[in-house]
Length: 88
Image 1 (cartoon, helix red, strand yellow):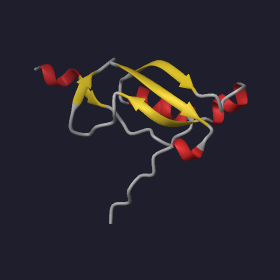
Image 2 (cartoon, rainbow, N blue to C red; image 1 turned 90 degrees about the horizontal axis):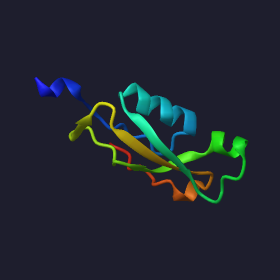
Image 3 (tube, rainbow, N blue to C red; image 1 turned 45 degrees about the horizontal axis):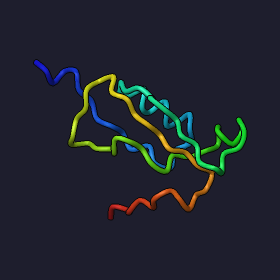
Image 4 (spheres, rainbow, N blue to C red; image 1 turned 180 degrees about the horizontal axis):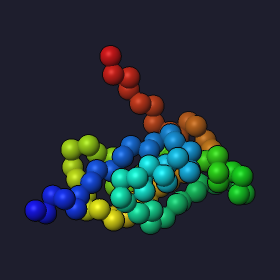
């Protein structure tokens, strides 16, 4: 059955770099690239940077093949991170 080799892309928006990478790996996906914006200038910044965009978009309904590549875009600028709507 072909469904065994699929997974879902987790929502890692707003997470710090290492937490986001761990969540991607925990979903059996690979990090293709970490893209840092101009606010990240050194190694310490890169550790504290947060995800403000990810490709592919997170989904709990559309599955992707295990081992698929994910690109994370990171920043120290909290204003770039989309505000999540609270579920009441």
